[in-house]
Amino acid sequence: MEGKSIIHMDQDAFFVSVEIRKNPELLGKPVIVGGGSDRGVVTSCSYEARKFGVHAAMPGRSARLLCPQAIFVRGNMDDYSKASHEITEIIAQRVPLFEKASIDEHYIDMTGMDKFFGCMKFASELRQTIIKEMRLPISFGLSVNKTVAKVVTNECKPNGELEIPFPKVRPFLNPLSVHKIPGIGQATYKKLSEMGVRKIETLAQIPQELMYKILGEHGTSLWQKANGIDLSPVVPYRERKSIGTQTTFENDSMDIHKMKSILTGMVTNLTFELRSQQKLTACITVTIRYSNFETVTQQARIPYTALDSFLIAKAHDLFKKLYSKRMMLRLIGVKLSHLVSGFEQIGLYHTSEEEYDLYQAMDKVRQSYGVESVVKACIVKQPEKDANGKVVKYNPRLKKTSDKEEEKKKSRIRTFINSDVSQTNKLSDN
Ligand SMILES: [Mg+2]
Image 1 (cartoon, rainbow, N blue to C red):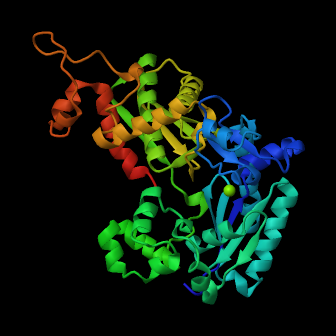
Image 2: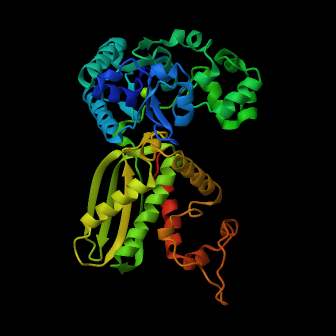
Image 3: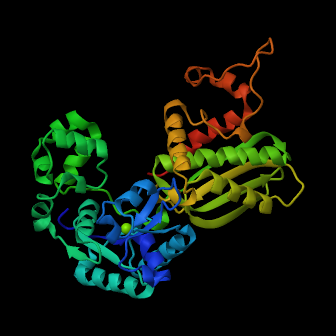
């Protein structure tokens, strides 16, 4: 651990900063991206707005109460995605090993490089390059692993840079509140508070076994982070896997409507998977194989998203471009790649709080009852009827125990979804 040098780079109030670059009059003012409509959600806010207690994912209504003078900006994911790709390019040109962690965060593994250049000097110069070329503020932390580096960045934000070398890790972490540990949720924070654990130092001193007893694996992981331990590697950007699914038809088909509803079902599953992992995608690929085994693929770069509606439209669009021959199809597939962490950003597409809540509610049902328990109406076939012509009610509880072969006969679409899910799991990365 002592030997590692990890840089965590994070844009300051990224979306807001992109808006200020477009409209410099916003500089120094409480600016909020998203949440402008009556029932919208805050996606990003300037440091001036944060002083009033405004934060991301908060209903715009509450933000307006806390900070009535705030300037609301609608937000444009295309602009943010473009800036994000440009920042990644600058980093990619200068470092051999980096990970794109979110739309505005990168980890860089400088281990071993410190023999050739000072890591701090290198990181500082890289930061200045990004500031100069992008005209966007950025901060970084340099330390012994990803977790500590991220905490360091958060402490020196905005417009900051700081190095915490190995001997200083413990003294640096100790006085901080436990809520500064990356990945700690509200519930865990509350539980720890009730236990009287407020500072990282206190958490670090609890026996590891006790933390496991109280919070399971998550407890162990928190204990390790509190002790400045994090063995997770920097995952190279280009090696990041995608999530994808494909299906081969029992009988080759030319039914375009059927193809489209299959695509819809596939994308719905993939976006559910994406949101479960709290990820966004910036690239969609559709593949089709004709009955003569000729295989064609179309890819599209898209603004970062995890939304069904947007990706379904894109998938249909790509399919339309691909399917040029009047020939039977034997296979169809969809892949989402260039994945980064993020979730709040979906609030930008659907500024409505209801839609935002709807996605969370639908995903919750799917997590409990299976991915096909909530599906778009357009991919559902006529309801099942029994021998007397009575509609058979779909019971997700029964489904779990039902015979796979029986299920297969019930609904082709569901079968596609089921088989896709097992493939999706195999292909997905964490
Ligand atoms: Mg940021």
